[in-house]
Image 1 (tube, rainbow, N blue to C red):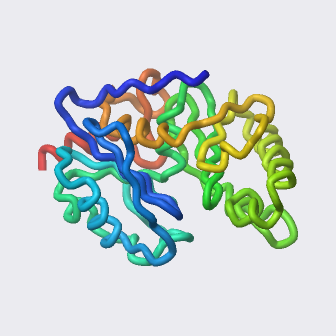
Image 2 (cartoon, rainbow, N blue to C red):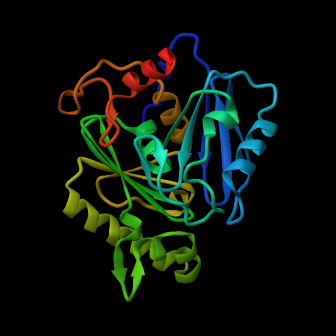
Length: 259
C-alpha cells in the first residue's frame, strides 16, 4: 500500500493547490484537506478558471499557489494550449490573477510527484486524456506519451482516454490498458508504474509491476512543489527533486522572494 505523503513545506507557508482537468477543476489547501471542485470543459479560459477558484475558495488563507496544468509546461510556463479546454492559457498571468507567487507544473507530473517513493517511476494518468511523467532518482520529466501514434491513425490517448473507454467498452479498454502498460514497461524500464487518474478505478486488476495511484496525490505533489530543497544538481538529487528542464525550484523561489 502506498504511504501517504507528509507535507514539509515552509513551516508557516500555506499553499493552495489547483488540479486542472478536462472535466473538473479541483482545489485543496494547507488548511482545507477536503477538495472542492467545479466543472471545466472545452470553453473554460484561464481567466474564468481563476475567478471560479477564488469564488469557491473564498475565505481560505494561502501564501502561494501550485497549478497542475493538462498540457505542456516549460520552465514553469505554459507553452502550448490545452486539448480539452478553452484558449488563452499561453502567456496568462496567474500571479496577477491570484496575487500570490504561483508555480505551474504538468498535471500528470504533479500527481506523479505526490505518489513518488523513490527510484525510477513511470506515471500514467487515465482520465479525460492520457497523462504521463517519468521520475528518475528525484528528477521529474513530464511527457506526452498519449500523443504518440498507436494504431490506425489513432494515438495512445485515443484508445486509453475517456473517449476511447466509451468507444471500446470496459472489457476491451482494460485489455488495451494492459497492452500499453506492458509496452511502456519494456521500453522505459521503470522500477514500477503508477496508474493514476479517475479511470484507474475502472481497472479490476492491475498489470504486473504497477500500483494504483490516487487523485489525492495531485494535491500532495502540489504541496511538495514548495518544499525547501538542498541546492543539488539534477544528477546528485537524493532526498529532494527537481524538474528536468526547470533547474532548481528553491533557487527560483528565493529569487521571487528577493524581487
